Image 1 (cartoon, rainbow, N blue to C red):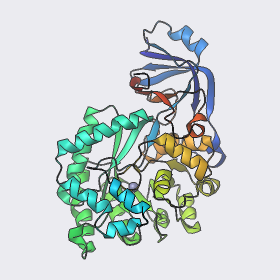
Image 2: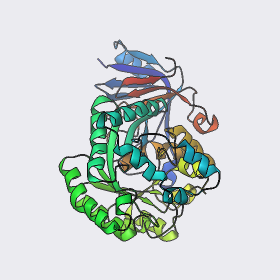
Image 3: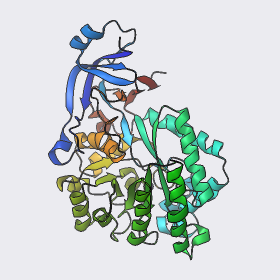
Image 4: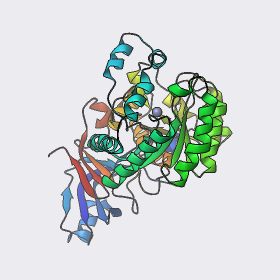
Length: 416
Ligand SMILES: [Zn+2]
């Protein structure tokens, strides 16, 4: 007997064919009108027409009628800074008054403001902050979440952040991929001795984090005035040597050769890419590195959006993420990211859905578990309020999610 039978859904899903979706394949969603999904032990064991599945599994006690709502895979958000203490709405106001992100950072604001607050928090406080935010992620349909460190910026506090993430993992149904980004900014104490800090990251933090399995990924803010491509490469190589996977923040504010690193080392993803040049696109394409685009950040900073259309047409696999953080993207909403990607980055609604599900599952190395609705994958799915995925970008600015299921268990319902 199955544990759950979802019936009468309009199912829309990418079909995994063993590699990230690129080019025309990114614009395809399989659909089953009046479809059903059977779930056993949190895994999809059958999927097809309601009539067929109802005959086979009608003895189950738990039947959910989707009432012809659209059913999609749960969103996979592969880039967030969701663990922080305190919001930064005053800086938001400063930015609106014309101060640039770098000006705010140089005035001791930005990331360094979050660092100060984080350092005085306990692990339990951090866990509670993250758990609270995970509830909102579920409300907006995210069922797999990457969370970065990077507001500690010293050994003790980076480890504290990753420990809080590990603790949270045990207490929530959310799948969390932890990323170590000790090189997120240059800490105040190392302002004039960045080399010493890079050494600390490479020689002390990474080996400790890998040994204690506190992170899956290592990440670096590769950017003008932050970490150079050479420093980034050293940090990434140290992570890879210790069996972490790697991703970088690249070409966000300036193009200084960060995405080009994809040809020199093994990266799962290059993220942001507002300023990517042809050589960067070529490097991503040749190396098969995913481009993770963060439209809410560009929107919030009033920047020009990354050219998603050009990346897709160039044959690069594109994923979408919220970049949720208190400074430049204070939104947990993947539906909002999808809306912006469609309206401002030139992606089709289907490409934006694929970028938010299967392709982002590839970024996190979870493509065998999540990202599409297929037999053998986790029963992570969302029901929309309406009957088509098109309502996500079309009904803009409104939460389109009706209910969310994680491994076959309902974790959010708009009705209660
Ligand atoms: Zn980021």
